[in-house]
Length: 115
Image (cartoon, rainbow, N blue to C red):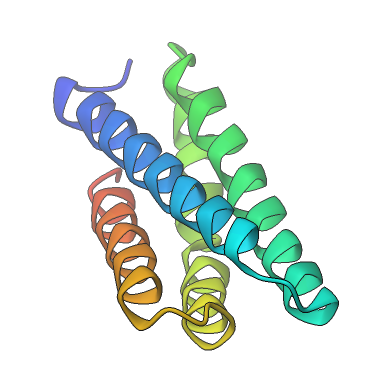
């Protein structure tokens, strides 16, 4: 059974990824270049997949299943860091890019608390 600290870390990471997605959506709405739109869409989909996994982990009560799910999340943290770097380069507005990056960094900190 996940601890309260682990449950809260998942809730917080989920909220942070959702916030990053919202800002990425705003960046998409502001972009007009098809190449940039495609890159933003790709990054949004990656964040959405990660969000799905976070949401799934929140529903697990079994210790072994929870350990497996959170181990997988932690293993994907490197990919999430790469996505963070890519988003910083893609999003044209510097403040929005920094805000998205900050949300992802905070989510990574919460993921690190899971095991």
